[in-house]
Length: 273
Picture 1 (tube, rainbow, N blue to C red):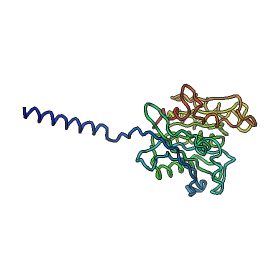
Picture 2 (tube, rainbow, N blue to C red):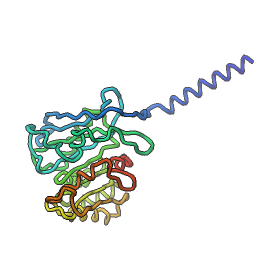
Picture 3 (tube, rainbow, N blue to C red):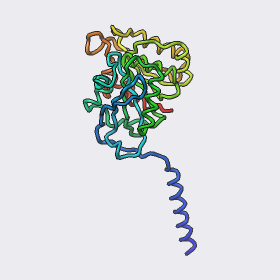
Picture 4 (cartoon, rainbow, N blue to C red):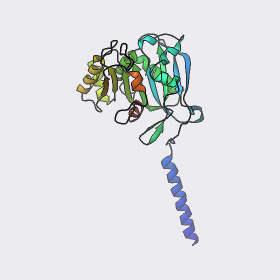
């Protein structure tokens, strides 16, 4: 009887140790209930970037979790230095954070995620290395899940997002450009396809600032290199705001806009490095 009790106790101890070992390293599925904080940070990351806005999950300081990162790239009209830094968050994802409308938490793959969002400000049209230096700076300073880095960008930022994917195809987990202002080259398209880097691009056909052909050509040339997953694009006829029909990002960034039951945030979280 005594031996049986000893055997049961030892078995329970082994089982307990095994469970602890199996769970070690797994981050808890944290439920975020607080709104993001959103503030400017003025510091020289490189010669072309004088600062950024950062949106942190409301409970960031209370956890030790690593978070997925969105780098949100602004358009040409917001170029500048440290003065007037707030110009970079007057539209796109930045405006959602400013208005407390950015989702506190996004469910994907049976788990909850909260994004860290960084909107850097550039003095001149940035190149891919500028974006990489921003990512390196942010990942060194904040708790970032390096397997879940996502790039979004509007107009100039959309063009830079495409270029970054082509120049550094193994850093981002997925890229979402809006109204891209330029085209990529064949080598960049091949790099994207070879890396299996997912893209979901948006544009309006009546865009009078950046021709829709920028996006359709970029996506089609990536497809021509047999990309897997195949890049997708959403092309609307016009902006809901009229005018020059350049703004496709407001609708695309809205968490309520979904295709195949996924908004852009849920879509991005399907992918990780």
